[in-house]
Image (cartoon, rainbow, N blue to C red; front, side, top):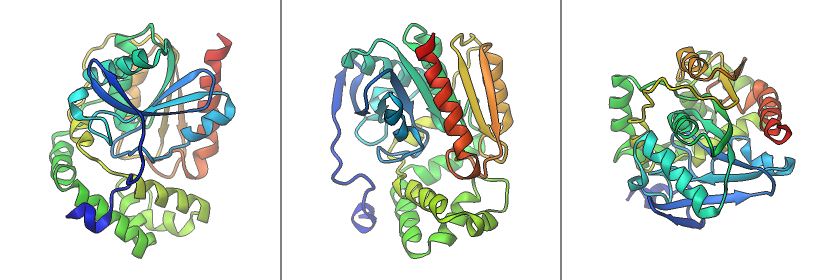
Length: 290
């Protein structure tokens, strides 16, 4: 009933599905050149855009899978970070792709860690962006299961309805969860283009059964990640505190960290967006120069 009332964010969108030994994995590909595997974060659907859609304009092929439990990829592909990482490599095998660079965003952080650690011969370098690298707290897990289990369709349906009927109020309520700044002031002062990007992103969100998997993700080993690593985090992000970046720094001896004065967890929007984009682009381009 909820989908009838509010509509799914991806209706009418049909993407290819690779039949891998771990199960079917939905994906989309754009551009030509060195491949960048983009692992979007929690609640992100196949239509969510976080700046990576610009990479094909700069000589990259972007491979964007739907992670287990999201959109057309069943959670049976792998509900742990380790299984999800192996599923991504199975997708690469099916598509005949030998090596990739990785962008691991937010709740996909653990999957990115396991990819780099378990399959070092397949991963050139990895950019962790607002990435989760520690287990969720018990409180977040309980709340996440309550809001984004069976109720997720209602939660996101109401959110999209609010963005249509009262966009500024709804955006303020959403951003209050991902910023340590005054969300009301942020919404009042942001330019129209930035506000539009936030609204479009929140309209695209849909947890499916994927976020319930994300809540279980861990990467407990202290085995080092040797690939070149970029760690990007926002200084005003309460949802992924500094300790997550600190763990990545400890795991990755060949790392560089970019801390930006972004307004929210979504560092790809707003005043830090250009700095994040330029650093990500330069980092990924570095793989071509090695």
